[in-house]
Image (cartoon, rainbow, N blue to C red; front, side):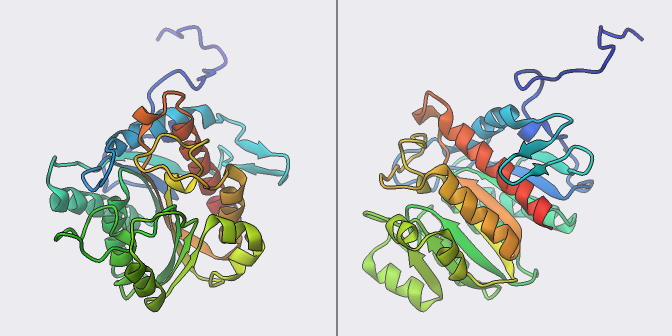
Length: 317
């Protein structure tokens, strides 16, 4: 067989090859998932109330994530003095996308739920790339029958609408639907600010149903450690990150940008603290709409947050 000139193996630079998440192996057989983390795309954006485009989020994040395909060395962080995602022990796969049926929310959501259930059945942590925030609804649905968890939302908007004009499964509803689940023990809703998607009554309902709501300004005033101390310790966490939690100056590529948002390290330190405080059992990152950001930095931010969070989930285990 010809060597193709690769006497010492391939360098496999980020711009070479097929764009799976982080250039990790692709698994098309969802009954053969053998990994610690499985990444799923949920390219659904029919739940939007303003600008659509988050259906292209998984594709944009995957391409951006190749920048962080560290190859054989893993990712050395000199501040932590830790090699995250070391090649010899990192078991991450990309299982592709849930099938989306255009204009059919319930069928599309059911397909997303089916995929997440396959990941859980394999004993892996599901990491889901949206898609609009309504994809969190089937992700949380998939945890029925699992042990309870505390939901941590990082977002500009409360997303606690019960029903509006008959709509119960749009991107303004997911935290309300989650709070209704008996296996969701409580919610920490962090970054909420400005004119939200939810009325005063929704905020009152959220607090009554077990939510702790903090804005970016409140978070900054108390600091990361104080925020972490408001979250139950030694428990299971499901984390949902809306990219509009970040300031539009670093995350313009989203449907509903909201100024006054987080910067990178604030969120990374919060997620790192969560990984030390308990166990992240599921993660979604939603509302990346690449076409609104010609610089692609929003997709890069999303990929960087996901790669670093996965690295810390695995390391702190």
